[in-house]
Image (cartoon, rainbow, N blue to C red; front, side, top):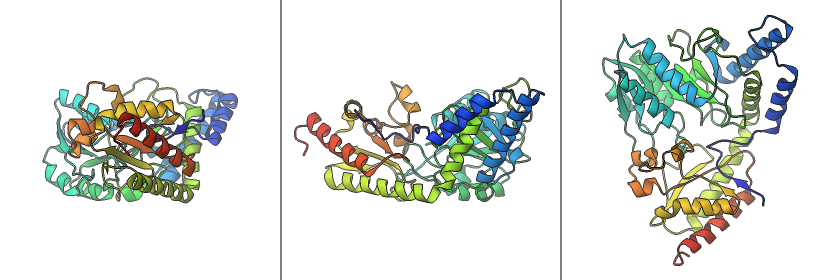
Length: 386
């Protein structure tokens, strides 16, 4: 059975060119970048060349980029590292109510350490209003974190506007850009965020590699202590093959940005048109206008309780979709997606959505096969459905 993968927001297939770059590095450059011999020097050169290439894509200085194990580590480090290093300046942190679990749980831990956390509300559109940021700021606020693109809804947040507010108030601003990097414009100089988290496996790279941009002058504590790699802020032997693959994945995204964006817009438009025209009682979660191409989150009124069965039956037909973020599926006893709850869905609705996320290797045929399978399954689940 040919499988159709429609869960690219959770993780993407590895591009063959990324795999080639990683394989070449694994076989030809196995030295430790901290070693002084020729093999170590070669590894160090590859590491710094990769950092330079990625900084050009992000439009920042190479020394402002620190490689990590992925988005979760980058987000944990940004929030915990900055808060702990600057707690004498204040103890108040502001985040949105639709952040990734790793941001929410980092802030929950920080609360146990004496910090105060404000969750910003969002409306039905799933978009943060910059005015709510301004109103939430207090004299003790030291950090604001709002994601660039929501991983469940695909909604694009007004990061530039928020960064202008925080800059005026002399407050550090962090954004989780793991769902936006490589897909929409992400320029560190224009965006004016002070810290930016990115990773590889959302842009056709491998899992286990990411980076954190830390603007020059920002004081942050390390989470990992050891040999003093990454200029003393992130100790561990650098994953040179993973970093090489990450940078190659980023280069491919930006080399083919316009064509990829056009393809995803076409596929998303076709999917929404077919769903709206062919299915009864469908509704969409989050704004369909201020959103990234490729993520469509929807449900069927009265059928929300069947979402998991629907997903598993699609899986039996060789089609991979999700009912929310991959990380949220680990919370088996939760009241549904916290993102959908934040936009006003009740507990049943929050457990009953389907997220289709398209990617580089999807085709129009995939959309047709998915919609045909979805109709057959809905009719099996409800004989009155037509």
